[in-house]
Amino acid sequence: MSFEFLLGSIGIGLIYALVSLGVFISFRLLDFPDLTADASFPLGGAVCGLCIYVGIDPWIATLFGMLAGCLAGAMTGILYVKLNILQLLSSIIVMIGLYSINLRILGIGPYVMDETTRLAGSPNLSLLDAKTIFSPFIAEDYSNQYFVQPLMILGFVLVFWMLLNLFLSTQKGLALRATGTNPRMAKSQGIPTDSITILGMAISNGLIALGGSLFVQTQGSADITIGVGTIVIGLASIIIGESLFPAKRIWAVMLAVIFGSILYRLFIAFALSNEFLQEIGVGTEDLNLITAILVVLALVVPKQLKKHAKIRGKSA
Image 1 (cartoon, helix red, strand yellow):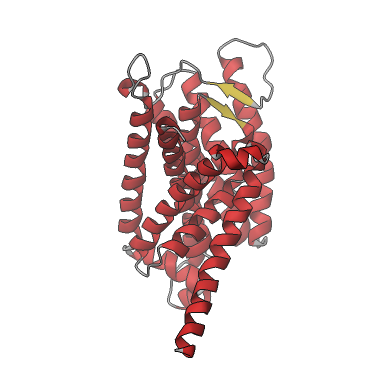
Image 2 (cartoon, rainbow, N blue to C red):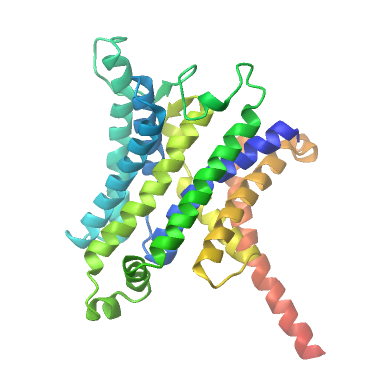
């Protein structure tokens, strides 16, 4: 594995750390099985990519991508709390609807720039040579690209990790945690659980969409397929982080999730670059299978180690 490939994997891992934090809010704090992530990730990328394509400042474009994810998450929450649609079904409905919306968004750019006479959906949008948030800091020969991008993304991760820590210590944040832990008790204490759920889902998918916005800027294109498996990656990162770095305080748990995301991408990079695995036919097409194996190992191995430790303790 080359050093550049290693840095690239860490950069992608940091992007998915934002995704994992978003999934952590919905799955762990709100106890909301949310599949909207598979659509809000490409939604953020599509909105950000479109804005950059038509000449909007990349920082503003990144913000718009994040806000689009907030709207998607809020819609999932509204379907659940206002229309009484099941949590999982609400997220599936929004995910399906966003697929068509994302296609439409990706097709707006060429139409606005008079590159086509018909407004139609598109599966991708090229951002090659477009200005991104990384452009002012990257040399003309791209010699420092592998250092600049991971460092800037690390800055995003640290900022939002700290903001989440501050938010979860406020009354709204504590109300969100209480809503996920025991909704009935929270409601009896006067907490507006419906609006808190919508707020939590908006924050969750906003972080996921932010990851999508950063992802398209590192890849040089926005594509409808980048969201496939997003929720699985987020869950895998959470499981790996919580298994390897067990913690009780919320700030430490979220930090473990961040490390879990980075380790997940490093595991994937190792699997795809390992010569032995390449010789036996393992390739990029096996990415989802590798993810599934990692999740199973992260779930099973810690339990088996604890079981063996108890057995040894009893025998001693």
